[in-house]
Length: 62
Image 1 (cartoon, rainbow, N blue to C red):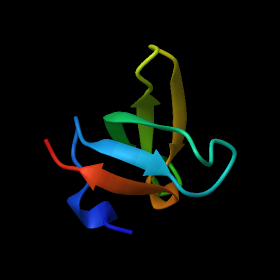
Image 2: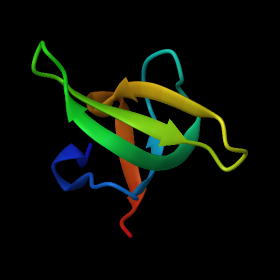
Image 3: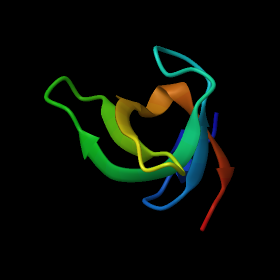
Image 4: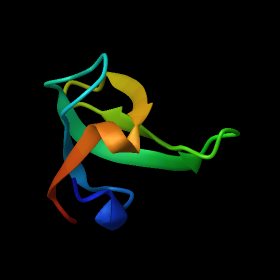
């Protein structure tokens, strides 16, 4: 995992959790009340979902 390099606008693939196998652009990086980094992933078809940053792998940095 390359979460330390995850930035707004990066293309990423979900490698764990409910949305495993999906990919899209990372937006809305946020630290939750429990201290975990959460992101919103926007897929190419416009669908959005939230996931934990620990569940994604950066494919390409923008």
